[in-house]
Amino acid sequence: MKYVIIGNSAAGIGAVEGIRKVDGHGSISIVSNEGELPYSRPLISYWLSGQAAEDKLNYREKSFYNDHQCQLFAGRTAMQVDAVNKSVTLDDGTSLIYDRLCIATGSSALVPPIAGLDSVDQPHTFMTLKDVQVIKKRLSRQLNVVIIGAGLIGLKCAEGIAGQAAGITVIDQAPRILPSILDEQGALIVQRHLESKGITFKLARRIIRCEKNSLLLDNQDIIKFDMIVLAAGVRPNTGLLEGIAEIDRGIIVDDHG
Image (cartoon, rainbow, N blue to C red; front, side):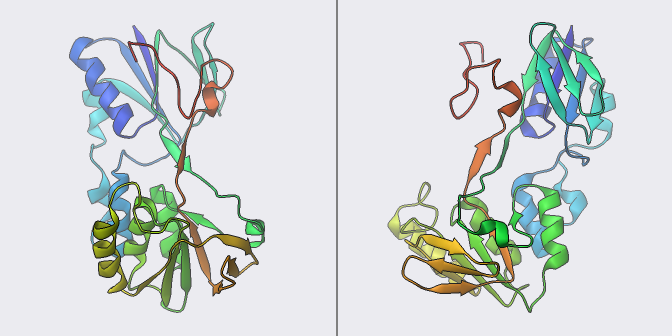
């Protein structure tokens, strides 16, 4: 049996371990568009703040792949899935034949449709270790940072940057932070804690437009910034299977997953 797993994060690693519980000999190929060992994305904010060393982010060692008899195609992107001939083509032309294919591609940052966003020199996202490495290189105590989104990703970003910038402003259309997680009272407790770290919130506010280094809000406030981080949510990485699978905000599966 030949297995191909696209994705090298928690789901992909879990698939390897699950396969090896029932099949100790089948070949396993893992495709990852990141070059790093599998790491915990929730911890990247702690690396940004200096609370965690980079090697502490990894939750599997390099030996994992040899121990589980699988081949890792690191830094490679799956470009096409041929469901008829059961093959996956990578960006370097490599073709991987499979009997079973696992799609564990996760999600990517959702870029909100903000008018004028293309005028910003270097907008950032906060999803991967590479994203955070780029942010860390730019950070200084002279920079004012704006974060779009007061959900979990946006607040993790704000927490990681706190103390390393001149100011941090978090903007969201929702009337409270973490609206899908906390009720009004709980959100207020967390907000006050973050405000004590110097983080400012502009809630229940809509962005009218962006002009290079400033944002115009619907109450006519103008927020100036040196760095902007887009943390307005995520979208599933389903593009690889468009046209060959049923997709509705994710891949529709049968009773067998």
